[in-house]
Amino acid sequence: MMMDPAHGTIGNEEPDTRDAQKNNFAEVRGDTQPHQETRRVNNDPRAKQQKGSQPRRDRRDVHGWVVLDKPIGMTSTQAVAVLKRLFQAKRAGHAGTLDPLASGGLPIALGEATKTVPFVMDGRKRYRFTVCWGEERDTDDIEGRVTATSDQRPTREAIEALLPRFTGVIEQVPPRYSAIKVQGERAYDLARDGEVVELAPRPVEIHHLSLVDQPDNDRAVFEAECGKGTYVRALARDMGRILGTYGHICALRRTLVGPFGENDMIPLDQLEALCHRAASGEGSLADALLPVETALDDIPALAVTRADAARLHRGQAVLLRGRDAPTCSGTVYVTVAGRLLALAEVGNGEIIPKRVFNLTGLTASTGRNERN
Image 1 (cartoon, rainbow, N blue to C red):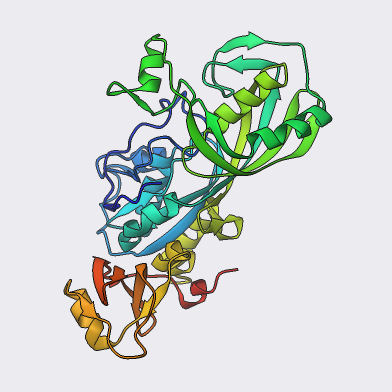
Image 2: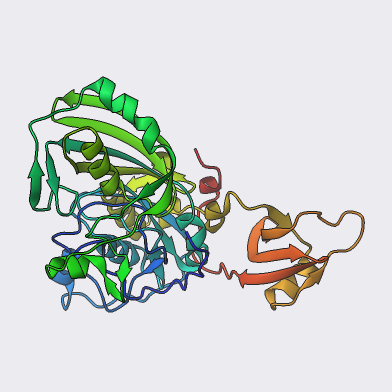
């Protein structure tokens, strides 16, 4: 994903790959801007039911990551709105859309964690998905209109022999119902209007693809780990065509997003239960938070003195002096006394701050700094 700064406040989210009824399965999207939510938008039906019946609670500073195990049927916009309400957080945003009929990891950044969203979006994603053979659909998933059928069904041997062709850097034509822009218009808008959308193939990287189950002749279950810009729906479509049949996605679960895996995921009902316990003084919502710096696992950490930290906090560069000066270069995250201070660039003998963090407020519990 592109290293664009995440502004953190909930702003208007780009539409998912289709509208709420047709936007069904997650993928590593072609438009790689971090998605932000807006304070005006709250599609959570429970929040709507409470509107006017309860006074609005004051928002507070909450900083950290919550990796929601998103249930099927909930949009990413709704998920962020629900978590923002549960934590009474001032700012929230997610790191990669997960469509309504998909389940699994939806990393949600709260407060200062929104500054680290691009690092998560730039990471690998892992999916477990089921392909239904014999039908191709215009959306390449179960919600679309059937456009072609076949009585042929691939054997396990044929599927496994095909997988190397879809591993590594490959050329992929994105689905017609995707968020890619065509002359300033989203492809899915043009497709919904009945226009013929021709999208050019582009390179994507699939690090791993395996067949994990074949419950019957009509279905096959795969696991894929891929990089930015990969469309899982297109993968199912293209495999079906080469195998002499047709295929579309009929189930999907995301199991990895950047540094966040299944061990980090928390189901919504557990979050709501923790919220109720915290309200009665029996727990803390901090227990659900992962530290802001969790998103920076692949970036070197650089510890500085309190004097240097004060300069960096003011946005001033710090010279690297003495024989003990670090020799690293490039992007680092800076800490002082074990606490995250800034994202910075190291080069030409100095540390130049790029994003400074202010972690005053609710942060992750101490135990959450040591992940499973």
